[in-house]
Structures are given as structure tokens and as C-alpha cells.
Image (cartoon, rainbow, N blue to C red):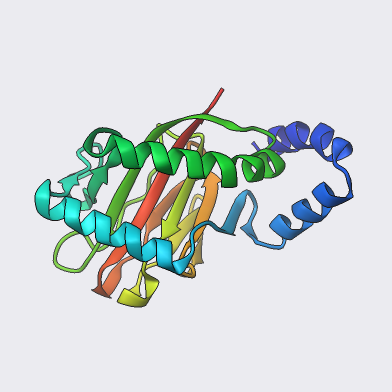
Length: 206
């Protein structure tokens, strides 16, 4: 997969001007491991607005477990595609303007549609962590940390081999973990206290 990614990127790099090369160097400085990056996506203020909106939707509609996951690891979600199309559209536009150029620079491909944009939460006593999985409906995934100051623990494990993995600590507020969803085996680490709120973008590339 890395070789395929390199072949996609090489022609793009050759076409970049000095500003584009500086942008690529800046993004590569935010690489956490091969094909996995941390990028700033939202301001802390906007994160707080998103959490407030999610809490309102949670009270009025209710979080639903992701039934595609194993029973013990069904993470409560609010899927904006169906529950709040206006918010879904707004977030899609933000992603298109902020993250599409990043995806093209880093992966040599650009998302053409969102299969889902959802709020997700982990908390002790409910679903504190996830199990190993790929994002089957996502070519490129972005997981944005909305309020890291409100929980202890968390972070993400990325599988690096049959018996090995690398742990990425929880990200700064408003930063997103960007990776290739279909091919990156990953899991959310356990939250020991508080509540971990995330906004997850699943995208498809044509």
C-alpha cells in the first residue's frame, strides 16, 4: 500500500511550486507514523460549539450504538447524515475546503464524497474503548478530538504487525487523526475517567 501511495504522490510533488513544497514539508512534520498524521482542523471554540450541539441532539434524539461493531464494543454515535442534514452539509463543506488539499498532498488522492460524519463517545461504564477494526466504508478517515481536557486515558492504537502496535496519545483539542481507513487496523484506547467526544469523518475517493 505504501508503494502505491508513493506512486500516486510522486507526479504531484513534481508539479508543486515553492509554496506547495513548504506546505507538504509542514504536513510531513505532523506525521505520527507512516500514512498517519495529526492535523489542526477546528478551533477550540468551534469544538465547544460542536460538543454543545451533540449534547442537544443526544438529549432530543439519543445516541445509537454502532451495530456493525461487536456487541461489547458498540460505540454510541450520532450520524449527522440522517439526523441533522444541515450540519452534515456544513461539515462536508468545511472538510472539503480544509482537508481535501491535505489528502491530495499526503495520499495523492482526493475524497469525492462522505459515507458518514458522526459524533462518537467513549466513557467508563458504557463503551470505554474500541476493538481492532478497519473503517470498511472509508478510504480516508479523520477523527477530530473535541474535548480532550474532559477525560483521562484514551488515544489510539495502530497495528504495525501481527503482534505489534503503536500507541498515539490523545490529540490536542481540534486536531484530527488522519489515516487510510480501509487499510489501517486501529482501535480506540480505554477511557479511564470522564468522556471522550469525537467527530469522525468517513470519506470515499473516486
